[in-house]
Amino acid sequence: MNFIRTAIEDVVICEPTVHGDERGYFVETFRADKLEAFLGYKIDFCQDNESKSSRGVLRGLHYQLAPFAQTKLVRVIHGSVLDVAVDIRKGSPTFGKHVAVELSAENKRQLLIPRGFAHAFVVLEDDTIFAYKVDNYYSPECDRGISYADENIGIDWSLPLEALKLSQKDTKQPKLHETDDIFEYGVNYYA
Image (cartoon, rainbow, N blue to C red; front, top):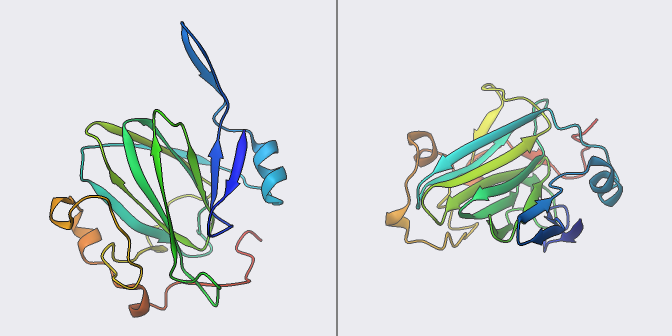
């Protein structure tokens, strides 16, 4: 497995080695020991989630506050998405900046989104199956979001805004500067 730091170094692209021949392929999608050795800290994933969506569906920008903050390791099983992580750690040198990476069944890339980041993805192909691991359980009381259309973040979703399909919840999220429910840079949210 190859690990690549992005423009925001805490967000990491994970590229598994694909072993293929005329029969198909084999890929190791997760190795805790290798990932933790690269990151320098331990992650205890406790839950796997999966969604199926049509082209244009946008889910996010979501996050959970401490003590239920989550690290996510996301990938696409079928289809493709543009996956986005936004730094929402007040005081961070990359606060309000984002990383966008195309994940697909074809490229088999994964993205690690650590605690302190909001996460979203937009679906680029019909019948896309998106799967991810989290290291903390869902907590409705700690569930938060940021507007997908926050012009200060400036995400290019690769599709026209009028083509996006959102939940009611995601159409009503505040802009980043309108909320204090975020993280502090330098705080260890893994303790």
